Amino acid sequence: MIDEKVSYLEPATQAIQNTLTGELAKVQQGLAALDSFVKARQEIETRAADSVGRLEMIIAGTQSKGLAGENIVEEVFAKLPIEWRVRNFNVNGKTVEFGLRLPNNLVLPIDSKWPATHLLEQFTAAHDPEEQKRLKGVIERSILQKAKEVGKYIDPNLTMPFGIAVVPDSVFDLSSGVLADVYKLNVVLVSYSMLIPYLMLVLQTTLKTMQTVDMQKLDAYLQAVQNSIQAMQDELDGRFAKALTMLANSRDDMRAQIGKASSSLTSLQISTSSSTPALPGPEAPGETKT
Image (cartoon, rainbow, N blue to C red; front, side, top):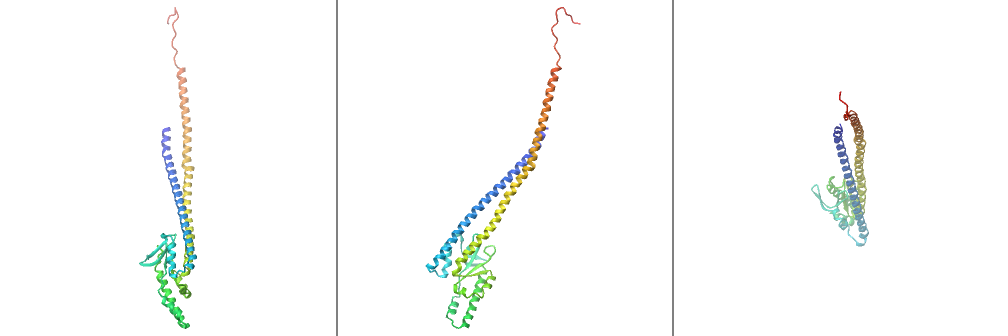
């Protein structure tokens, strides 16, 4: 009977051990993922802070260096971490001159070419208001055409959902009538002088967005660990507690059986001793057997 109880409990205890081992492994995996997440997050924040600092230095230095507007993009990219710089980025068979790889691993396409310089020269030289109005309309159409070209560099799988068209400040000043139309094309029109502040804004916004996404991942990791701990608690309160109760009952049962066996042996020993026949003594002189 004892052997039967032991053999009955062995599969149950083995199953409990396997369950607890599996849940502990899940907890360890969850904690390892959480640790990796925290370290990666710290690295991203450090690198982003360094990059923003470099951009601030560029802003402070452009006035004294007298950089031409066309060179600002080159200067910005020279100060960024190399893994953030993308040159001649190919999207949907089109190649954009610059791309900024953001902390979320998406690329922000940036087109800084403005081929219609002659239109600005004509607008500056014109003194007739009607001629200026006509030229302004031509410039606005050129801006829209540029925005359409930049819109072709957008791919939801590779890029941000918008692109940047960088134009000379004088062109931006004449673009007020088409800014809304440019925006509808998922393109942001930025002047050379405002490029760096705008990139800083994009970086900071991306980081804040990533914090929201990362917190969701953090919650998922914590929930996974919590689920594993709850599963172990349920196992301890369920089959493990039942197995302990069964072991305790088996122990008490075995003690009772051992007590009965011991009592039986004692009774047998006493009975055997009391029923043993006495040996005959020696005969006295003169006595005869009858």
